Image (cartoon, rainbow, N blue to C red):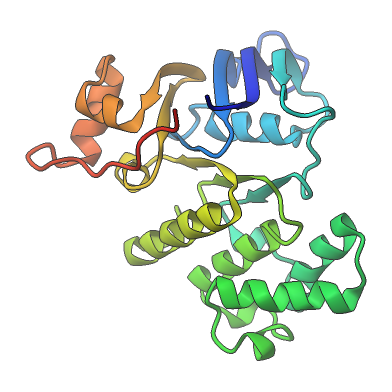
Amino acid sequence: MSNVLCTIRQLSITYGKDATQPAALRDVSLDLIEGERLAIIGESGSGKSTLARAIAGLLPEGTSVRGKIDWPSRSELPRPGRDIGFVFQDPTASLNPVLPIGEQIAEGARRHLGIGWKEAYEIALDLLHRVRIPHPEKALKAYPHQFSGGQRQRIAIAAAISARPSFLIADEATSALDMVVQAEIVSLLDELVRENGMTMLFITHDLALASGFADRVAIFKGGHLVEQGPIRTVLAAPQTAYARSLIANHLDLSSPPLVGRDTPQ
């Protein structure tokens, strides 16, 4: 029997206190299962990133939140950076341009794991190896601008998992990359999540990209959760017109769909 990591019930979120503002999320209810890879799909403005930031506790001050986010398997709220790793869309914005990447990766491990710099740098070096950055010993002292966009995203992933979180959120982490690099980053995320036994929330507007590795999918439109289920089931027999449209636009229905592993039982 799978354990529920996080339960979301009737979650509605509005940015600011103005009651006339449209809600970014409207009455969303969703469960996250330990060890699964859940893809959140939807067009821009559908509420995907708002949901991710709500789960991670990263909503800005002044945000109006109704509903509940509970963590039944935990005795306390998960800590961003320590228990929840977050990979943002733009690594150029998430990486500090004036600090060497080794220091940026090591800082998360040092702060959250309570270790010294020497051990933290050893973790950073190991992670650069694992995300396949060329010449990792030399790369420790290099700066973000010295790497390609795909390499910067690999470095951002290394920084996100430096404190060994059990839950990883990748928020449009491939959308700024070309198709070949997108596939490489998705493969890397899949590999790291499997190796470390993490739960992952993968947010994207590209259903085809997520279809190759996700266990379940949740489809959003206009702040509403319109359909959810095992990826195989939704791709084979979508229940809503919007889901059928997404599949028609992003997958070649003349061929068998790409599907992920079976949903954990």
